Length: 317
View 1 (cartoon, rainbow, N blue to C red):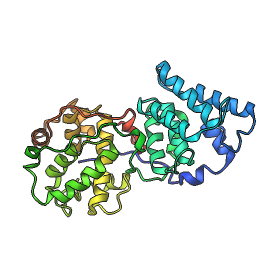
View 2: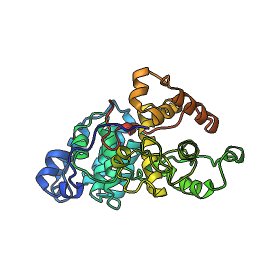
View 3: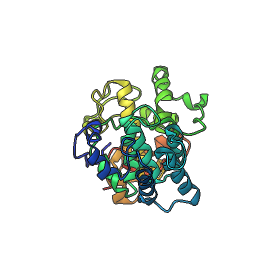
View 4: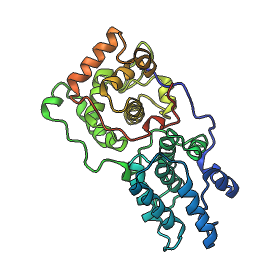
């Protein structure tokens, strides 16, 4: 498997980047709680949120954003950070970049929820993919883990169905412990555990110490570049490897809009090869890989969050 080539350009911690008030005002276009003390300042903050770049959002999403901004800044209503965060999250789940950015900003500053730099970075990446300039600026300032799950409010309402016994049959007995870990972690990345298990079965046969001739390592066979990108320090640690592999899978699902066949081909041969051939590359190994995955995972399409292909500052080649 191969990984995208671009990197986060500045290893500056998000926490340090957010301290200066002038930087906050310049980059975010929003007024922090310390600066939003007067009605005119709060109104300016709401106006900045309303005017921020976004995709052509339905009226209902625009209303969510406007209401959330009023609640965040106390404009005409009592300030209510948790409710503002919940409304931003509803907009973010519908793929709105301003909702994704605003939710990331709230989490980066611990407004309405516990501070979570990793989830904030994921959300900035999703918004940046849709051209949100403030999100792009913030994304280049974070060194947070890129394999951090999205916040709970962004996860599916209905969990993925458990693996039927007939689908689990091809997997060895040793896979049960790994399967329990996948069942725990995969929903945090909005990934069907059955897809992750199929990838692991093909990649490593559930061998945590597996190493390929190309130096792909561990359960999900992360090459060193991919492990570095998703901040996996020990590719032979089962949990770290699975988290990194799930983060990469989520990126591929966003990149290929949930097309499982193309995701499988890209996991094996790299997304650039899939782009070059405009489909599954004519490599015998890759074509066999795609067939094997189809036998283990019976769905042609997989849900994917809007903007997921930018998570971790990854760019389309």
